Length: 265
Length: 328
Ligand SMILES: Cc1cc2nc3c(=O)[nH]c(=O)nc-3n(C[C@H](O)[C@H](O)[C@H](O)COP(=O)(O)OP(=O)(O)OC[C@H]3O[C@@H](n4cnc5c(N)ncnc54)[C@H](O)[C@@H]3O)c2cc1C
Ligand SMILES: Nc1ncnc2c1ncn2[C@@H]1O[C@H](COP(=O)(O)O)[C@@H](O)[C@H]1O
Image (tube, rainbow over all chains, first blue to last red; front, side, top):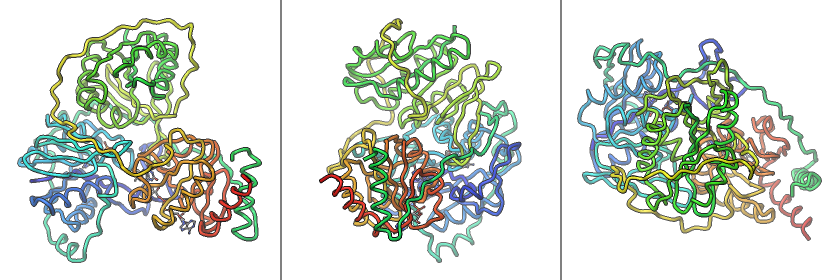
């Protein structure tokens, strides 16, 4: 089975609130000195793909629309165990909305050709629209399963595990298909081994441009159906009342008393 | 006139709150856009008797599909019906709940098929010169944005609990119309098995008045057992942050946050949780948030109403004892 994972590189979403800055004109986060990382659900999707490869064989390819800096995240996915990675990079790709992104990824997948399963994160860790996965399935005209956590079997068709309110359900889908991935206890991403990292650095990563994918501005839907109009950092008003007390024990008691006083317990 | 169309999946026993929240959004939008009619598509099995309630909460017309195939429908069945209805009615705005079914599946695919602009996970809106600007958190809640969905049709998925349902007005009148459901839908992705968790999951987060939630700082499943004890004396439900859920210390259905449950209890006690915006997106509507954390600089002390600095090992046991003493 050939699994393709669509991976987005983002500015580390765990940067503390007081260091978080935006550019209100460009309507985007200012990177500053923050590291770039694999968007967290995409890292989970890489883990799911590698687990499937370990169980049933096959290969894992990573594709990402990004910049030269994205190569570092592609190396990380290779070091985790992916077989190949492709960077989709072109100035034309920079200003597209989710419709355009899906069209770029679809063109890359058609060029790859022999894929069986596409995995996307349930939503990117920055603007978090949760659109590109289902859009890509529509663009390619293939079935789409959403919010699944893992593969449970692969035999001409795939069976997918999807967490539910009260347990989980098993979905069956024909191949090729696309799944959007959410996290659960079965898919916590592994760390790359030192050996893996060394091998990854030697794996060549081809770059495909708009020309390679036969895409032009018209094909990328520059009409902009989804637009960010304004962005700002909200003020927070809560002032925290710290419970006093010499010892932890005393603070605990005072907390209990305060909560009773407020009628909360 | 092109309408605002809302969606609701009901059950025999109830209308989900989200269906009523969407109607509150629709009414307010309708007023600001100039008396646009509000239609509600109401799907499910055995839901007919609840249809008037949708009118009482703001719908002008209810389109009812009460059918056995809608008891626990496949995603693609709901997508198929939704697409059909939207094509026929040609509404101006489609409002969907931002849940797994509509936010994760139906909304995006519908928007793609109808070439509609879409904004997901909205928490508010503003109308400016007849244009709708959708408010939504971005960067895990660190920033807010107004987004526009361009096109003849626009789709918005609405975050749960971002809006209050309107009070029921039994005098409101409206029309209830049954819509036909095609007998057989072919689906490519099918549910072949449903597995209910065997373990006791305790009180559900949705109903609990008090939630005790633990994070990575609890260190282990054993650490979590003390939170269950605390929850027992308080009659509370137990939730957790993403690391706690990934580690299997709490079931994933008890994950609180942007990608888990959005809860609004009267008291939320967060223990060993740092207060990441993605977590607080789910807990932030609680009336009172209490944080117990050993790090006085943890971000949660800027987001909680009441804080206790200390290790949970030293704070939680005497806290449980104090509550027990208050009881007796
Ligand atoms: C796209 C995206 C979506 C996400 N969605 C969610 C979501 O829905 N829900 C969610 O929770 N997270 C979500 N996250 C993850 C989120 O960003 C944080 O990583 C996560 O919430 C941190 O969990 P935590 O507070 O338990 O752990 P940490 O941040 O590691 O904090 C642990 C805390 O425990 C304290 N501590 C340690 N030992 C003790 C002790 N003995 N006593 C008391 N305190 C102690 C520490 O001081 C620290 O503050 C998401 C992330 C992304 C990128
Ligand atoms: N630039 C990108 N390159 C590759 N995949 C992407 C990119 N942007 C989004 N995706 C994929 O689409 C998913 C959903 O993204 P979004 O719709 O932006 O929330 C991500 O988790 C990725 O799997």
